Image (cartoon, rainbow, N blue to C red):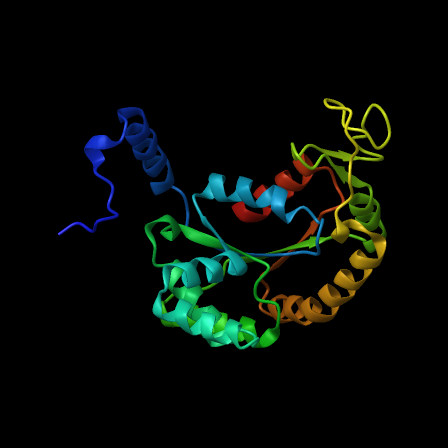
Length: 246
């Protein structure tokens, strides 16, 4: 018996069905890929991730989004996660791994996944390996978006946005016609709180402290590909494609 939330295919436009069918046929020939993306804020993971996802028919797993979805859906693991959050506690590694395990069973993850921003510690990396091993799977590559902190500071602290439209500018790379003013409306631009040098410095310190042991862990397993993330996005995409085709 179909669930109440199931979609009636008769109500789905033919163009949508054909588009999905063609996508699945294209995806059937793609190799399976299980990837981790590691990189500091502003390193370009958010730009490359959708390209990789579409090219290799992978699902994108961001643990924060998955936790919120599990809590909202009131899954058994989501209920446990909410209990921890309500007490002001960190959600345990075992719970997060359980939520990842649930997610990769979905049809959209059939060809593999991109894990973005996880694992953050060696203990989490070990638990992830254990979970995949139980499923008879293993990671294929860990893409490390390497970039100098000074370049990141220039990238991030130069970002300005027009709040109501979401239009973004950069004081050096994509400046507005008039400094501090939106090109279309003439309204003032703002800088996000997280885009200041002081906030970035603390975030980068935390990133390096947490993540370098994880990169070392995967380097020993010969899974790490170091990308030149300071390059323009198209050149980084070419590097990614080259690394995933080998």
